[in-house]
Amino acid sequence: MDFLTLAKERYSVRSFSTKPIEKEKLDKIIKAGMLAPTGCNLQPQRVLVVQSKEGLEKLKKCTKYTFGAPACLIVCYDKTDCWTRKYDNKTCGEVDASIVTTHMMMQAYEIGIGSTWVMSFNPFELISQFNIPENYVPVALLPIGYPSDSCTPSILHEKSKAEDEVVFYEEY
Image 1 (cartoon, rainbow, N blue to C red):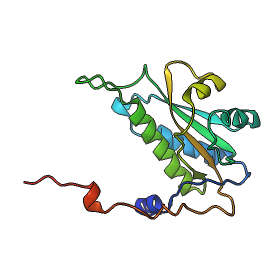
Image 2: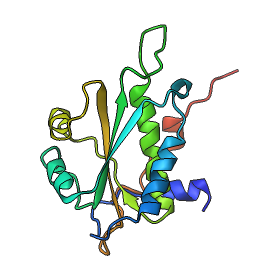
Image 3: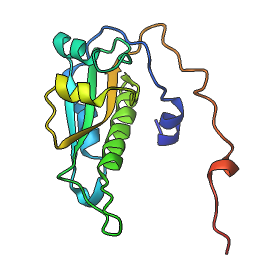
């Protein structure tokens, strides 16, 4: 599948089957995240794989958006391990974690695993429930698994703004 087809067809899965993800497929998704580009290749991402019944129950205390997924990736960055822009001291940790999350989402879809990016979570509860170190900043939850038989893309999936609303070319 070429990349534009993959990007167009991938959608947020909000209803998962209970079928567990095979280790080989989970490893491939994780590897895609590890291959993602990060600022100065410092790789500040930290990914917690949650797949136990207990862990998934704890996750429900942090967000209502788990969609019955059999696994979830908690994507954080280590704020002590990020490249920092010298002009304003902005770190790239959140951007790096976002790129990593996107790589994993796309790889998951390419091998038949659904996902949805969840940012609606209580970070304080997440840190508490999973004993996340204080130097790690949670950025995204990525529930993953096989889509249920009834799962379909959102009606908003096909909608996008016109190119001239989002792309601007400099004038020479």
